[in-house]
Image 1: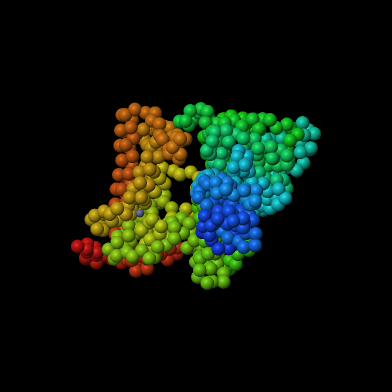
Image 2: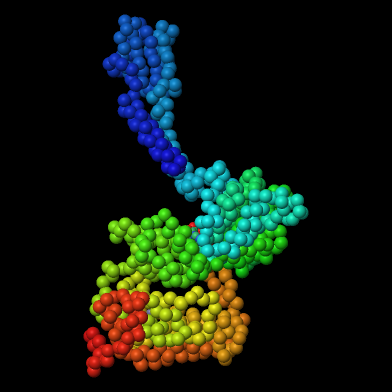
Length: 615
Ligand code: ADP
Ligand code: MG
Ligand code: ZN
């Protein structure tokens, strides 16, 4: 904001100066009176009529003894005094006053000639400021941009974090350290310095650390690891120093380092050699943590979703030796998160949050918060007074697959193909014993997808068996198989499914040891190439012969799933047709209606049932 203001006032100043300069160039202060030639002035001087001559640059203001005023101009470089002397005039008889450089018009004339310089200077200054970002960093270069919440300390408390009771219990201890350090110190206990919050994105790590500060009523200093990785070497380290200085001055306090994996990776893992910015920043964090005296009550919380890549030095006793895991919430946890976020919103009485919680396996706390918000937005757009179950259902689909794209015009042929494709997924999933029950089938385009089938596990699952994997694979291929069987040709619509199936099969072989032929071992070491961002490289720890065997196994597993899906859909062709036709006319079917349709007796196939391929 400040920048914009400075920029604007600078531009205005420039315009004003330009106007004034132009004014003075075209209307120079000539004094008053009629203009006469220089020779007339000299003649006047010779006749002794002149009282004074004021010289201002090349313009002269002449005053006669009888009070008349004239103006005149002289040659550039010529001296009035010399001119008078040459004309035989006694110089002392005429007052000659040289105003020259002190004249107002000259100042502006000067400014005017510097105008281009000023202008380019301004442009340069502006560009430099732009490059440094909106924060006025020119002065505070290298200071931590830690945000402080002193005064209005975080008002978040444990009550705002739902469904992570174990984490809360562990962090309750930290709250007590901050509140009553004497208790622990008097018994000679060492207060822990660092607590690592570990969990997938959106599970409330940031929220939780603010809640700890809120519960303890202490200031909260936060900085994100990715902020450190900036332009100049050494800046990160000085930021860390500054951040900890601030925190120590305000102790008891919490320092929160978000995304610590961005600086805390295994040192030397990058391709950029050992002594890079990250390493210096990390070292500084370690130095600061080691340097705390036991009386200084500052506790460092750090968050990461990649604890496996952290430098072991960070995890040593006295550093981040405590770990609090925040996992994706289970069904009870999801219910609590939903309740926290629907507080204060007009939720209709028909909404059963337990059902919403059941239908959202794998959602993080952030997803659920987003879900409630989406539902409220939908209700507002539909001009409803309360948020009903309809909106929640639609919001779930939105969060998973993106908003509906009803505007996407689909020709009849494509609609038919999509109906059989999605019907194939749904039917195979329904028929296989180890696949999750199918909850909803829709051929309305969403996000990137042409259609979409949603399965809901009967309960949360943490382990997956080989039988479940196999059924998942068959379900994933069900869409393509349905296209093959119905139309005798295949489309590009299944490419996502194939990718998913291939990845699944490969993981079964190389990571979960689920191949009988290759046995219970893993193949390849996954590693993140630090320098290339999120790129994952796989280091081969096996030979070419094994590589070939892996490929064969992956192929065999996928082939078996394809065969299973083909057999099922061939045997239940009538059901597939019934489901697809329903989808073509109704677009979406879910819940009990879907179950009823799947369980019912399918109408017998007519002689010519196959939709005639368009030509
Ligand atoms: P993380 O830091 O783990 O990525 P955040 O703390 O930034 O996740 O969570 C993002 C948002 O998601 C929070 O602001 C909050 O609204 C919501 N959220 C996440 N987890 C929970 C939870 N357990 N209880 C309530 N809200 C949560
Ligand atoms: Mg976060
Ligand atoms: Zn599909």
